[in-house]
Structures are given as C-alpha cells and as structure tokens.
Image 1 (cartoon, rainbow, N blue to C red):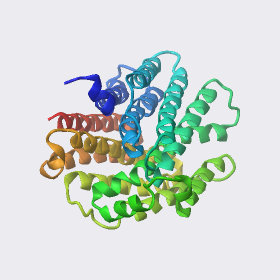
Image 2: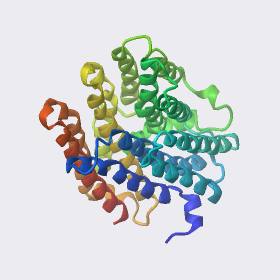
Image 3: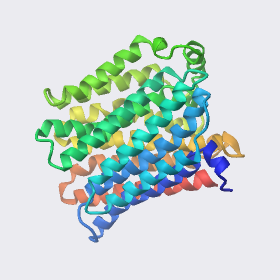
Length: 382
C-alpha cells in the first residue's frame, strides 16, 4: 500500500519502478528503429539509460541506504518529490528537440542528491564504509560528465579529445565509481564473504574521523582512476582503459573474490558473481578491441552496470518485503533473468562482427534485455 511514511523510509519503492519505466523507454526506440518507425536513436537511448534508468536506481538506493549507514534521518517528502520531478522532467526533455537540456536537468538532480548525502554525512552517528568515498567521487564525475556533455552539445568544447573524455566520464567513469563505492560493501555481503564485511565494520564503520580511516590502497585506487581520465586527452585511450581496468580488477580480487565461487550459493549470488566478472574485465575489452570501442564497452555497460544495478535492486526489494530474501535461494528464474541480460550483452558486443545486419542485432539485444527486465519486474512484485 502506498503511504508517504513508507516512501520516506524506503525511497526505492518509488524510484525503482520509475527507473524500470525509463529503461523500457530507453530500449524501446531500438525496436522502433528495427521495424523502421524511427531513425537512429543512439542519443535518446543514451540519455534515458544513463540519466533515466541508472540515475533513478542510484537515487533510490542511496536515498534509502545513506540514512541507514550514517544513522541520520530518513529522506523527506520534499527531497523525494524534488528529485523525482527533476528526473521525470529530464526524461521528457530527452524526447524533445532540446535534448541537451537533459544534461542540465540531470545535473540539478545529481547536485540535490549530493546535498542529501552530505547533510546526512555531516550529521552521522557512525561512519559509512570506507569504499563509500567512491560514491562521492562518482557523483562529482557524473556532474562533470553531464556538464561537459552539455557544453559539447552546444559546440563549446573545441577539442575532440576533451569531448571524448567528457563522454567517457558520462557513460562509464561515474557509474563505475558508484559501483566500486557500493560494491565494496554490498557485494561481499551478498556473495557470502561475511568475514570481509565484519572486519571492515570493526575497523572503519565507527564514530570519529572518516577520511583518516581510509586505507592507502583506496586512496591509490582513486588517484589512478582519476588520472586515467585526466590523461585521456593526451595519451592513448588504450592505456586509460587499462588503468581503469586495473583499479576494477583490484576490487574484484580484494572485495568480490571473483577467482572463488560465491560462498553464498543463492541464485542471486551467482548473478552478482557473473556481473562482478563483467565489471572486473570490462575495461580490458575495449582496451584490446580499441577499433570497436563503443561496441566493446557494452560488455561493461550491459553485463556490468545494468545487470548489477537490477540484481542489487532485487536484493533491496526482497530484503524489505514480508517474504524476505529466501526467494534468492528458491527461484532459478533469477539466474534465467541474469542469463537474458548476459545474452543481450553478447548480442550487442558481437553485433559488429556481422556488418550487414549490425542494426538488426541492436534490435535483438534490446528485445532480449527488455524480456529480462520484464522477468525482473515479475520477480520483484511476485
């Protein structure tokens, strides 16, 4: 039953459905293109998936999790409605002739979300996990990516290499930071590595200084990750992707233990483990296949970002439902859902291998992903 008391405590209840709707809107144009009803919808797809689907799920998760991790107050009705309005308005703008305005409206949503997080952080009664520093960095990079994309769309960025840097910040840099921030704490718990989480809570999730308890390896990871973008206009993009890949692989080995099978053998954990592998190697695919960078990056975007986002959202939804998380062990449909998203990833990445039917494969990939999303929705509400 919809009540503002529930929404204020668990904002994901309204943001996750919005994100799913915007994902449908972001993938449907490829089907329209496949059947010849609309033109090439790359920009619309990108805007709705990044500043619609992913931004909605990020807002839902963070506005639910940050108050709990900091011991601060829950989201207010005003905060929820404000962010919702910004995201929905930016989505409508994406369908207009003023698509570049989407970047500005989404920037306002990100600024408001960052303000929400900072206010809770200042009032915290306990420190959040130390990897959450990547969340702050991710929001900053997402803001920079949006503003840079807006300037590029308006013809105010003259350098092609600088424009490409903003594009990479927007499409993969910011989201990866958020994944590392959240995934450093949540993914080990889902995979069953409770000893890692317990150790981290004892050492870092205590009162007192937050920044002073961040280990050197995390600071070094931030430095290398940022450096890979700052150097992008000046050095080979292959090197930049490789640097980002090394940071992600470090997280994969240190926190997600990708070289070990999940300790928790639930269907959800298996899905997380598969997505963790896509994340850990996702930057190396375009580094190797640099001639088809856009296609290769979808290994990371689809198998990494979209699959992990939906799986973590599934865990959050299960954990806050009366039935609890037992379904994660009982329903093999979760693994079928993950398989559909991975099949969509493979279809999209390999589309370039068959140039005569390249655009057809984009339609096949979109259709497969949408079937997976519908199955996800049915699992969450069942």
